Image (tube, rainbow, N blue to C red):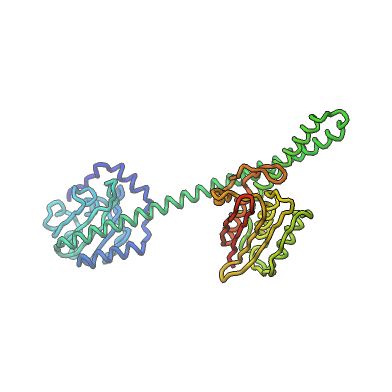
Length: 399
């Protein structure tokens, strides 16, 4: 037998083959294609071969029971270096290049071979789709075309598998990097809390001890330092809350009512007399994660208070139930959100560059945390707002 020559770009071909991470595990879709190759060509045996450096192994087969073959004894290895994409021998015994093959002397040896290269636009064959028989055969033009079409389908499936593997690896790296970022944020945030607390305490001590010696500018500077430290502490708390929201065991469900959630939020915020918080007409019973729900409602009602310039702040919470979801809305009479920003506000660190009721700017963390929690609860959230009229946030939670 003539020694199998190497592909003109063999090193590139092997590197490209390696990038597919093809394993010998059988795949139903490829087994169906080898079976289809037999039916369309009327040939009883079929293979999907992968040609490696020293051996050829078979990803799928029909009518055969083979694991692999030495490359120098493989018709498929010859097919991958053939000038034509289609390698065709009606009777192998009549081809002088293969007359000395030892297995051709066996009684049930391969007599017919037709193989199509598996390759894409890179023109680097990975192997073949072939049909074989123990007796001579002829394929008509339609059968040859069918085999070429099957080779194209096999190559598409291999490319799809390759993209899925690459996507899984990218996802793994993203998750790994995201976890590293979360850990970094937790460490940095916790490490900053103590110095900030010390700054706040120090400014209080300075203000009391030297109050008689400080002029108005000095007192204002100390107040500014303390205010900034509180803002930074609040910012850190929001970052920690954002990352900890990913750790909530959302599947831990319990039964609770919407009134109890609003009452807890009301207690945490310590609402003033100039704030009217209106409860839903009916006390909806909900079966979900109460901690996540509480955090979502707390954030939305808190925003309704902060971003509101009315003398009397009015916040209306409504609750309803559908066949698949619980539906909660928080409506206010606040400053409103521009229409072109109503989707962006759920992105981390996105702010509207406007100050709240206390003159502070937002940090763009709260609504991002809300979106994460609502997604985890199997629902969605949307914003409907009009400048100087008010905003309604509506979110759903899967039952």
